[in-house]
Image (cartoon, rainbow, N blue to C red):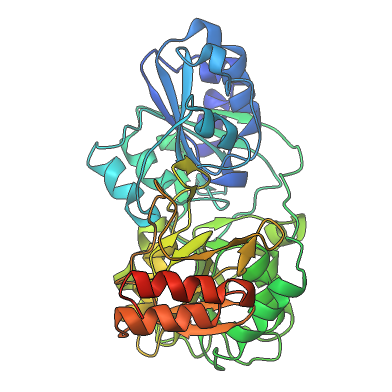
Length: 431
């Protein structure tokens, strides 16, 4: 049987496709723009006929109708990471979450510790060899494809066919639906003077020839804006967005001085504009890989001069970072921050930057605190922390004593809070 005949046999309506979901199944959905809207809409429409179905995903972008506390017994969402569509549910308790490093999600799926009965994902059109590209987010999805009873594709001509370990064959697919809607686009975050100041501090410490991992947000993108005069930068990251694309277009990125996969940039999911998605299409410079490849600290650290930039919400005087909750209230998730902090620490001449504004709520709260707020989920530990950057400067903490750390962090706190922090440090025997 030729590939096109097989394709036609597996093509169906979204309603027929989600008819393959059974009660008690766990559905794995890719990160961000990899989520398939037609399939998830059809699943939402069927939710009253289902029972005890779970949807597991990082960073959902759309609030589909199944995200409803009234039908949680029918379909519930188990978040690997909270996004705008699920944060309120997580904070109210009707959306649960799975604590895990991003890099280890494929392992949890492979070992059966995190279920994967059904996969629903966006996919490129099939090539002449019968392969589809899950270019937008191979992340943990490729592991789920190996384990799932049912793989459902939403095939869209706007999905790029990217290179890398992100391909599945028509023989692995149980059903597919066709759509042609434009992909979800995410604009660049707003960059203000505080973000710009932090970006300048970080950029001064990044040398020509460094390999970069850049997280999402205003401050990481502010760093990118300060790097366009650099030369021969490389990219080994989890997310590729328009900030990195602008750095490529400036000529700063060549990937030629990378010590691991020279000439190639790698990522595990894409989140940005239509222009970015077109950039992914059969681009020989770029490979999309599962997250247990991109984020594995041992693999990423094979890049010498690896510089990783990630944000936190709060940090205490020992250097513990609370990057995913406000006290006990969940906000985001662990993601890949720790993966890349550890990778940069292992990399020859690597640098891991944790960035944050010095204050919150119009300068009424110091984000550098004596201790984290009660209940805060610790993301990056005191043993992993390296550089911390606010608009007031840089504190290098790795190898420093507890008292030296407290002194350095107080030095980059907002001036209005430094006396208060020094007094707290004294009471804690950190001064």
